[in-house]
Length: 248
Image (cartoon, rainbow, N blue to C red; front, side, top):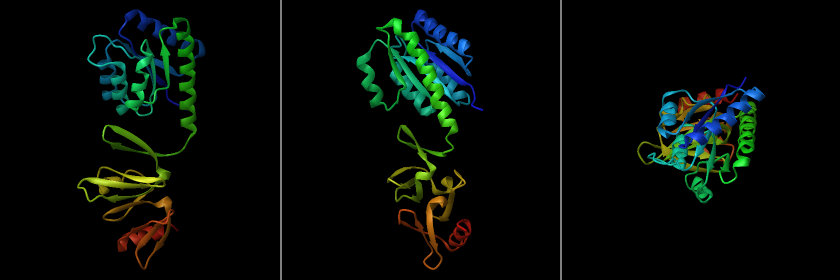
């Protein structure tokens, strides 16, 4: 059963804040949806403080881009939210359609943009976004695919475990190279940390962790694991023995 979806609203105009919350709560009550307004505020730090100090599961955010006298605007708030809650659904409610392009710059991946220029359409759009959010979370709940999160710079990437071939120690200290089905990239971590991140990961060598599900074969003589793309990974003596058993 899917957990309750928390809804957050950030709007610096008290009248508009109350109006948006009323639209949301009325619809949730009528449709008896497993959602609740967790925080409705004009202060973006209130939402960030809550997210940083509580367990976050499924969330929907309605954010005004222009937050008036606050230290950050809605785009910056959404960017900070995205670093904490990578799966959250973000909807912007704004007068500033020209700022939409910034969401791509900040790689926020918004669910929708609602323009205040058309007040008669706001309620309908909010309802549409609530339903879309519900549908997307229901679909992801039925998807048993596992994901592995990797932080690169200011971004957090969610990668399907099934797409990961292996990890290797980088020549750069405290960095690891992840090899995927469609490429590779480097990030800050250590091999000894990676091996405990997923039950499919196995440290076959001091410098390598393989995804056992993507190992095609193991050569006991050359002590190499061949991945499904043909790449070969070195294994230790013990690593070779163990990997052979794991693949049986």
